[in-house]
Amino acid sequence: MSHKSKIESVLFVASKPLPTKKIAAVLKIDNEEAVEVLKSLQQKYNHADSGIAILQNGDEWQMVASAENKETSENFLKSEVSGELTRPQLETLTVVSYCGPITKPELEQIRGVNCGLILRNLMLRGLIKENEDGASLLPVYEITMDYLRHLGLNSLEELPNYSQLHQHPYITNLGEEQ
Image 1 (cartoon, rainbow, N blue to C red):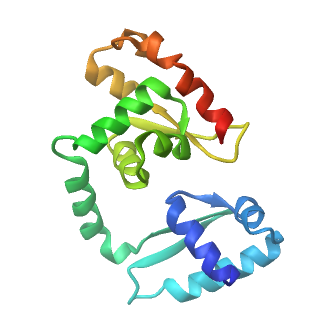
Image 2 (cartoon, rainbow, N blue to C red):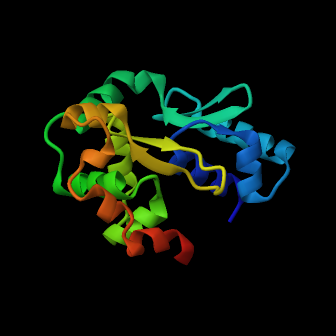
């Protein structure tokens, strides 16, 4: 598989700006080669007939919907973040509440299913946030102040059985098994 294909996949799944250094590190290539590939991806996508664009802002790169499709994209996102939470979203939110901060693989181990789209939706709704974890390459997810405000809580400790479940041996040993 080519570096171009791999960088394209990384930009797609990241759905946030990534520094050249991080992209190069993931592919184990030097920064100059990464920039060259990123520029070729811009040539591939950044034209009037494409629904996708590769943006560059200084040393960061991101795959986004094209500006020509802004209204359509915004309408889709509005429909995604309005209405009631689905059962899988509620389950994911509960796990993040009691186990957070938690990585996506840890969350998926608990739930037994891929949680990428659910996490994205919960972030769009402002209920969870993604933070970099200095001890790991993977980001961790945790609840937001808006989530606490919606529930009428002052802190997570007010959740039923929080201290018991947050310190449960299965949860505390989860990170060690990875």
